[in-house]
Every structure is written in C-alpha cells, then in structure tokens.
Image 1 (cartoon, rainbow, N blue to C red):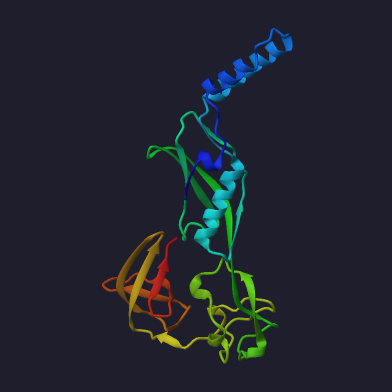
Image 2 (cartoon, helix red, strand yellow; image 1 turned 180 degrees about the vertical axis):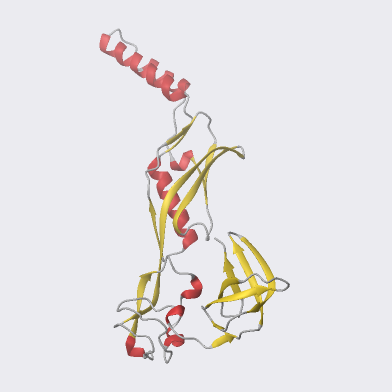
Length: 260
C-alpha cells in the first residue's frame, strides 16, 4: 500500500503564498494588526520548512487496512502503540506499509516506510496484535480419552485460532466416529491432535523430511523411527545420519521439523 501526504496528511502552504495573504491583510497601522502580522510571519517561517506531513491517525488507519487485507476478513487487527505524526522537509514523500501473510500474525510488527523518488528516507515498526478467527468444531461437553465422538458431542463456533497451526484445524467429517486421544474440556476446540487418526507412517518407512527455519525450507530423505498418524510427533533420521530428529506428521506423510 502506497500513499502520499496529499491524501493522508495535510498540505502546507508555501511561504510565498502566505506572504501574499499577509500583505493583503496588513494595510493598516493598527497595532493589533501589526502584532497579528508578525505572528503570521513567524508561523509562515516555521511551517514553510515542512513540505510533507502524515497524520498519525491516518497512518494508523492505513496500517490497519493493510494488515486486514493481508490477514483476511476473519482477522482482528489492533495496534499496540500510538503512531505519531510524521513530518518531512521535502515534498513528494510517499509512504508504504510492509508485511506478509506469515509475518502479520499474532504479536507482530507492521512496517511503515517513507520514500523520496524511490529512495528510503525513514522506516518505522508499528507493534500490533493480529488475531485470527474461524468457525471450528467445539466440544459441547467434556470428552474423555477413548470416547467415540458423535455429531451431538460438538458444535461449530467461531473461535480465536491465532495460536493454532493450519494443519491442526479439522472438519466435522474428520471427527465423527473417531476416538478421543486426549481429554477435551467443554467449549474446547477439537483439533487434529485431540483425536486418534489412522496411521499413515509405519516404523521403518522411508519418509520425506522437511526442515523449516523461518522462510527457509530444506528437504531430505529419511527413515521413520516410530509409527505415526497425521498430527503425531515422531522420531526420524536422515539418510546417512544417526542423529534422531523430532517432527510432525502432515496429511501427505511428510515429517516437518520446525526450527522457528
């Protein structure tokens, strides 16, 4: 998102335009008029040097709109700190919001960058809290380990899923008839790890291992050291290595090791 001071802040009159106004209003020797004349002169000089001004309130709204557009309509965006007005000596300054789908999540920062003719002149980070909401299965009562889940045991309700991974979220069709793996409290979100799933990896199977570190992903072939169903945390090792690694089984049978 790019915006400039013409549509987000206030335009400042030039000293020359102010002088014309001043002279036209000061054709009298009235002392009060003379005092007003000199006050206006002072204000003219102090404002003449600021050519681009961005109000904090307009910057705030721009950040919220930008983050909302990235995070989606189910997101709730809150800025933690007030944004101060930003003023620059040069005209033609433009401002850009920065951030992506992965970075604009939970406790995060929205970037604000100010440019002059394509060159960065200032960058600030705006602390924010972005919550994600989604319609998910929620337990109607406490479900105990070993219980078989029926349709009357849960409802669909909008919940804060900010701290859940997308692979944790499951559909009602995936729940019905499955056994509870870990106790689920009443009004608790039913996630993939809450239920028993059919094994998709057997001990000794050749598996694909993906190591994630921020935006970097490294793939390798390996061997499963334990059985695993979707969502399970199992031990694996890479081909040609004896070091045991721990990762999560994804629906396609890949074992993902996160180092974030």
